[in-house]
Length: 311
Image (cartoon, rainbow, N blue to C red):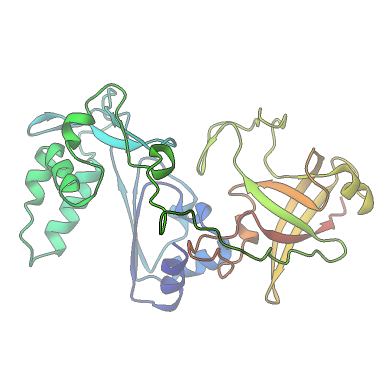
């Protein structure tokens, strides 16, 4: 994702297609990502509902409304279902039961197949056949991805099926018959005076960037999301009080990023640390600060300072 955003930022001829979700809010370095989207020749969003990303577009922009997973999906071969993977690595079926809001709404597979038919002229894929019966899509997945054997049969089981997982299966293969240990240096996370190490988290009433409510029952926070949870001693050291309004500021490679107007809340976190919510604090996460190997944004490792706002 990070590399894709950088390419968008550098190449004004790119076409960007988002399948659902609120891409802009979900990504790191929100202002940088917004510039990248505006730099695209065309941005396309396949969506079930409007969101912030639809307002930050390329030189041309399309919003393609689609059926949601809760909508009934009838194709040539009859009622269809899609398969999804949950947080435990279980693949299961998802069948919609609601009447679609419009007869003009297409499913996500139908939209993608339609784009492919219109643009990929030199190919031998029968896109229409896959839309007629989603089992054919799953057959193709089974043919190329390990762990999906008997896909159409197993996905119809009430509980679905587990994807391969070495940790769960206990199927590690030791090198030379022995376990391999490595020595890794601890990162230098020393904080300067007034700095905190910020991590972003999700709330109880949230799925990715979809906010279903303003209450975080996990942590006892109600009716508010622009909060910074801090150790009580850090609050005292910075001469702040519960409920003070502060701007959060990160400075990475001499580039300042600012997230305005967060409420200070005492919470049981280690001294020197702070918690904010995703995606409100994504604007503070540098696009070029990523984890080694995985290249994922360092959303749990952002150094910030606080600046009290005069009310």
